Image (tube, rainbow, N blue to C red; front, side, top):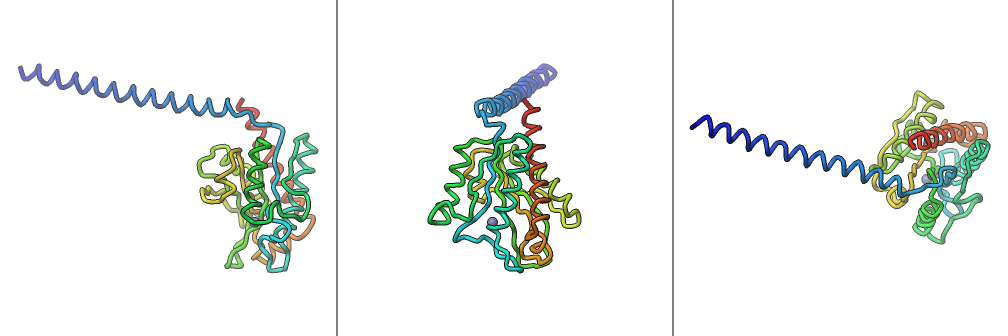
Length: 235
Ligand SMILES: [Zn+2]
C-alpha cells in the first residue's frame, strides 16, 4: 500500500514537471516567434542611414577647454561620415547640414530629431556628440545605445571597436542607457557616438583638427558599414 502511494506521488510530480516544461517551451517558442514577427513586420530602409550632428545654432553643446564648440565639431565629423558612406553607395539623411537648431527650443529640437529618425526609418541612426567631464584627465570615445535594443547594442559594438582603435589607451566600452530622450523615443536602431572629451585639452585639440575629424568619421563609418553587413547577412 505504501509503495502504491509513493508511486502515485511520483506520477503526480512527473505530470507536474512535464506540464511546467511544456509551458516554458511554449513560452520560449512564443518569445522567438514574436521577436521574428517584429523584425519581419518592420521593413527598414537598409540602404539609408540617418546621421545626426548634435546641437547647433544657439545651442553650442559642450564648450571645450580650448574654446572649441561641440556643435561645430559634430557637424564636421557628420559631414565626413556622409561622404564616406556615400562612397560606399549608402544613402545618408542629415538632420542638419548647417549651424542651426531644428526648433526654437532645446526640447523641440530633440523632438524634431526623433521625428525625422522615425519618419526616415533607416537601418541605423547615428547621433554625433562630444563629451565633457569635471576630471580633465578623462578622455576617449564612448558609444551609447538603448538598453533594450539588441540592434542598437550590436551597432554600438562595431562603432565602439572602430573608435577605440584610434586611441587604444583610453579605449572605453559601449554603454547601455535608458534615460537619454533620443535613445528612449527613437523607434529605429539608434546610437549616440560621443567621439571624445572636450574637457581634456589634448583630446579637444585633436578633435578640432580636420585630419582627426576625418579619422573619427572613417572609424564611425566603418562601424556603420559592419553593422549594415551583419543586418543584410542575418536575412
Ligand atoms: Zn552633445
